[in-house]
Image (cartoon, rainbow, N blue to C red; front, side, top):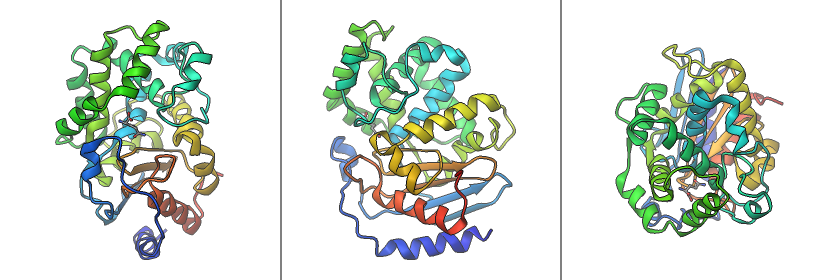
Length: 303
Ligand code: GLN
């Protein structure tokens, strides 16, 4: 497969794509990002690396981090996780409060904010130095020792935390947060503030496509655990647009309001895209389009 030419074609065809959305406005620090950035990096399990555009520029991974926190929590707690978070698509916005009341404080899945905050609480309980240890984990799985939190972004999200604070307090009222709410939110805002390039992001998710093993050969999760998390990314990775992403792209993946998307074809490749303009559901417009072109052109979707 000639991935280099295919990515070039995608770049050319994406130039004229009519985007209607804008960069996220919910985190003031992220509203400063240039809307026209666009990069893709594809890494194959066999060891090929292909990048185009702004694929080596750092951006805020935001909710993409939720797939990595759940992977780490899964390695500590295995199936016990699902006593406190569900595995069903929510059909609601990523930061919605409405379902929580009906479902008595058990979030539908770990990728909506409520679920990710419960996972953050689990990690705060499991890790000795939660922020340091999580960063060390990210550096290990990505093979990139320079990945950092962006403290300005974390602070900016803290300054405008009202909805996430509402979710965390609501969860606490149901007994589904063990630790101090402010400590859990601080961890959550930091995980979301991690910056990566498309290249680093694709490598971070390599183990999801490689039966649980990183590129360097470290077994992070079992094959069966990775199968389960990939299934969750497929059904819940794009909030109330997960069906649409599955329909158009046909790969498990995860998005973030920084404009990043990572998707993978098990045993074949991991691909990361970055374009900051978001659609109404908070997913990158151009990123989704580029991935649709990729699976159409390569014929490689899991379906
Ligand atoms: N940090 C963001 C929030 O909590 C993450 C949302 C996202 O990327 N979808 O609102």
